[in-house]
Image (cartoon, rainbow, N blue to C red; front, side, top):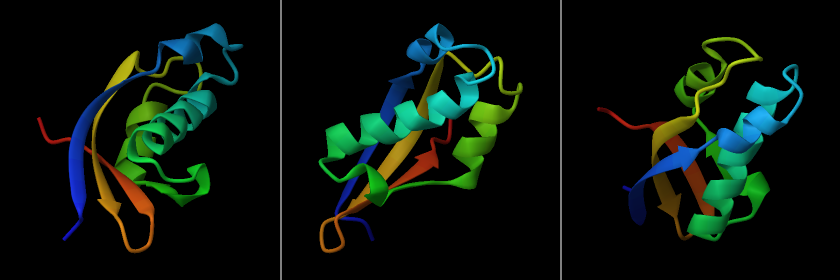
Length: 88
C-alpha cells in the first residue's frame, strides 16, 4: 500500500502553446513535472501508467486533452510516485 494517495486534475493547456506536432509528448512532460512538484520526488522517479499515456495520446499527437484527472501514489521508502488514471 502506498504511503500517500491523492487525486489531481492536471491542466494540460500549456501543451496547446507548443507546435501541434509536439503537443501530446509535451503533455506527458507536464504530467511528470506536475507530479514531481506536488509529491516532492525527482522527475525521473515519476512512473506514468500506460492508461494515462493512452488517454493523452488517444486523439493523436495534435489534440491532447485540456486536463486529465489522475490518482497519484507515493512510496516514501523509494521516493517514487506512480500516476494512475482516476476512476470516475
